Image (cartoon, rainbow, N blue to C red):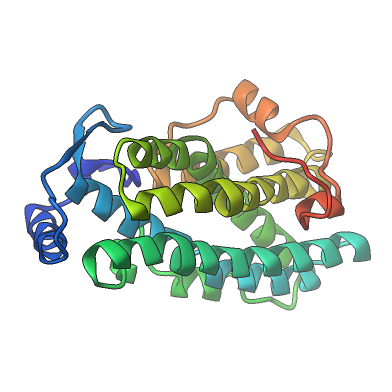
Length: 266
């Protein structure tokens, strides 16, 4: 079954009933229809509320593995400039993932239902295993391979979030004139999208610095791992041509990755 962030088919009746009760307790009509969602089904306020919880938990789940990836980059035998750039960029992303999960989507979820989003709502599952997976080994080549695989997997998730999940969420927000939605639209525009764009640039940076000069088999493996990440959140796989367009012809600069130069991913 797809684990798409915005797919109502993934939500059980029990979970829906709990969401409806929380909303009603806060004086919010859970049955108000907001129109067609990303998967072709009608979305009501209860479905929108659950989507917020899923996005909040999924974003928050990125905090621990990106923190671990930052440290792994220092043990992968990379040139100093690349290692330092990856450490700083993944460390920054870790803080941004936590902010998206807690301050943006988590707060909106709480304001509507009076409960904090549970980690069980995450579309990518628990992060404990991924953090263990990213622990440095004595062999730097192994660490480099692990870092590349993680970057591809996470890049797959980030591209779906930036290009599909967030635009769909914005569309739902625009159909409901509610204070939470008005604030969320500003937060997505001013905070989330610029930061998520840099996360996709980081995915591109890893590809150009660690993968692009390698054999076709290694490039294909990076693409395959990207598609594993995309599938994790219900995204369609990329073919070779689409992947080539996505990663672009050149590596982003360290200044772009850290937000010191304005450059947003498409």
